[in-house]
Length: 256
Image (cartoon, rainbow, N blue to C red; front, side, top):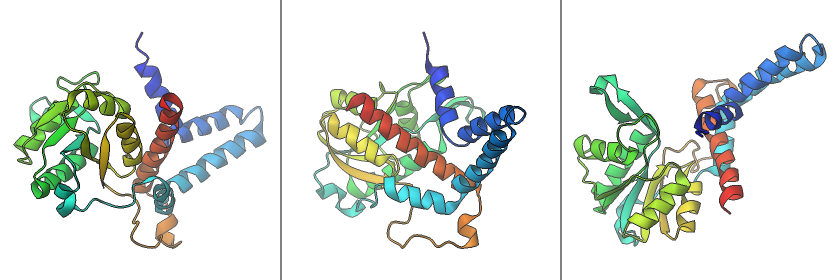
């Protein structure tokens, strides 16, 4: 039995903005029978939407979860790393603008660009990691390899195509790759979970985070109007913060 649709439903309802829809709908349902409770839940929905959409919220939350420092690209070659492994972040199936070919999602493209940059500076072998979720003609690793070589002109030394999540990225890479000390490229919010899983699988890891939400080298932003006003970007960033927080808790419970 395929439980993926149920998994996606639960995941989307546990994360903003789905979580806000759940609270709001519950408020509407209770509004007639328990007006005070229903009105309170509707008010809570509006308050949560404002708080979760504020840039200040994502800045504070990201500081607690992100890998705080980028890698020094110029010294990566002397770090002992034997290869750069870039993790997949999703792909779009049959993109019409590319003649129906599968193509990386924006999160994956950000990782690919940074991985190509690190390879140019360090000269280390580059490996892509990501399996084949339903709907894709090729694995994420193969899609990433194609884009790296055709568009970023970066030579890919190998692919890991059997994984569907971060834990499997690690275990499948450990089984298939000849390297033991690697640099991992993924988003700064995702990096702590990735490092934990790859070290648990037996790798020695040099973190190479990118796509930072928080500015760790500067004091936290102020409480000005622009910092607390709701924005779409603030909601997107908070979504990923909550996603990584829940993902970390789930991984620790399931695997540790």
